[in-house]
Length: 272
Image (tube, rainbow, N blue to C red; front, side, top):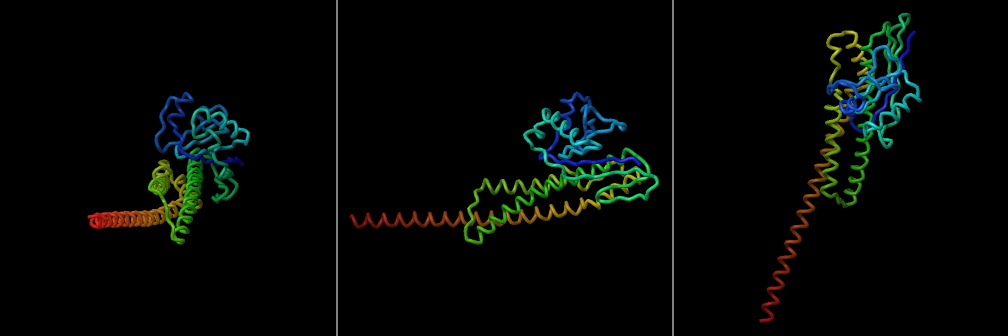
């Protein structure tokens, strides 16, 4: 039996693969949806026979295959000098582990924690890395969405007490964060996109479809989308209330100014 152990990490930001390839002296360009496969020790392009390797995805996923904790730590220490996204402890803790077992004597099986397949195919590694990279990236977004929900919950509590003071800058920042959740989950992580190999390889398509269902990629994306839309609706309510409050203040200021003008006019009549 041959075993492949996967350790999934997520960084807080995008990984500029083409910039990184220039830093590492790799003379090739990477397409938007293509991962960079590196030898985790030498930081050179990895081949199918390389043992310890890492898949880097532009949307912030780093998937290590058969790498010890020491190799992972040395990889991050070596790569952080090339890209700011890896500096200053911005990388997140390991978020998911997976195992692939190649054993012709066992029944083929795919679960949330491991997969058993009868034969080795390098495309299987690509698909497993792609799915768990999406999963940890979605988990990062889910945590950020929950943080914004907590912030909005505090605003709702203030509104319940009759107080709502939210500057336009903070309102714009909140709306920008919410829109970024929807854009990142759909455009960057490509939740709804399948790897190209699945169109030509039936077994690869089955593996991807099964793993995507087990990791609930589509359902999690829809939940992020629903939460984002709810947050946008709430932001719109806050914005309308803030505008109404501002308009009421302006009206009172106008009324006070008119009153002052009338008072001055009356004082002038009394003097005469």
